[in-house]
Length: 314
Image (cartoon, rainbow, N blue to C red; front, top):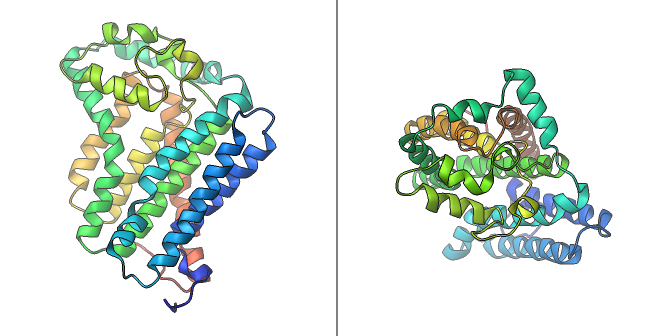
């Protein structure tokens, strides 16, 4: 690839993925513009994002600006959160109902009980504290993996891992658009009594408030069940944690010795802490497998089409 030319081949697979998903969300906003408040703001935000990506790719094609190079590496981090918030403005207006009853029925069909009620029998403050802390590490796992790869100067592996992670998030967002649900902490338990029923030790309540704020229900919110994000199926925490674990093993990074035990506890915590039904976890596993299969195909298809370096595990 000639670095002096600015063309489609200048874009990484990740850049193309983000642009495509932005266009996809724009089309969905247009289709449901009569239902989605401020749909035009969403579309404007999508085009600003796409424009910024074009600007970053154009400015970094000579690899001369260290700051812009770092922005190119890490812009997916804020983008994932901002896209999550855009999905929030779309899900409830599009559906106007939730799928929780169906998810609850599937769990009961499998277990003949509600798993969160069963786990409540073994709940204790020490376990709750540990699992709430582990649950909060989710936000840092992909970043830790990425930093590890960059420090080892494994840029191709970094690009592949980032592509897989971002694709995983986008696929989970599509799941939220199709199957909106709010989770057992609202449907099977009293949300306002969570701190009383599942007390921790020192950090639990603080971390819960951070999670709640990220899901648009900061402390003191009236009728949180009405405005919380519909982000239950699939379990993104399960899907993305499994992807990080899988990548760390396949790429043989030492941080796998942290990701694996932490990840297993994190997946268990999604049900124990009442954020998810077990069927959500199963959905997360299915979406993780789909991400791996689709991601490998798309990444190498784009690379071959644009004379970029393909990636295969050694």
